[in-house]
Length: 304
Ligand code: SF4
Ligand SMILES: [Zn+2]
Ligand SMILES: [Zn+2]
Image 1: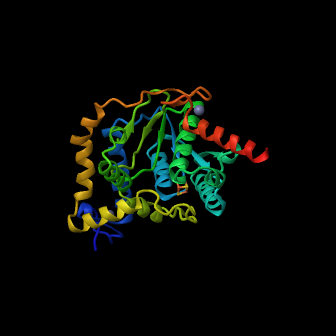
Image 2: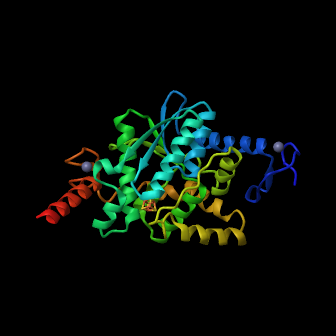
Image 3: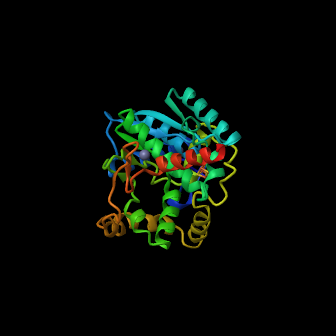
């Protein structure tokens, strides 16, 4: 197979784009998709400070490197969740990556706030992934605001976004449909959030990492069964097989035509500020302060 652009030997086939590329032309394609996303959605400018949420997975690492290669000012924040080997390996990979590509890295350990995930899981009845997601969102936002970053960038790709859309549509979740967009502007105590990989697939970010020799595989989180919309991704992959291009158009048309109907809807619970930490919440205390209170009272019951 030949590269569609330069006729050298192709190494990356992209059936959904009806094309194949050699490594050099694939990198060009990849960076153009990221630039297109940034400009089309007015995500950020060159004079702004960008914090990249670095999990140690392929998407976030590819995102940080690509933004740096485009000349943006990026720093990474890794949240160490305290989940045994999985967290240790994810942190090591992230640290190694940042050393290799000279990207500034901050590490925040949830253990320091009494929120190591295994401890939380042992005390809380709700599904751990939803609690863990709240903790991560809280600290990414908090850290970005505390340290004066203009924007928080995450590595969500098109497959993540399409699976999330499917889940939100199946439950007609108005609030989540309203908030599903590659850019969420800064408001009500939230930093601006952007997803510059929203035009690229999971396969494409993996190919980018493999060709750039970035190591990204670590022991999966032991609580990961059923996480990250895996089931919806499988359903969408089947649909894509029968109807190529369907996945992209489902998401693309939502952004172009569908979302505006939800964007007008007012949030059912208006946001105020947490009485303890000042972060946004619709209740008296934000989810993380409530969680910490719950864990503390559990501890005192334990010791009494
Ligand atoms: S799988 Fe669930 S518990 Fe584990 S890191 Fe991801 S969100 Fe957190
Ligand atoms: Zn080529
Ligand atoms: Zn709070």
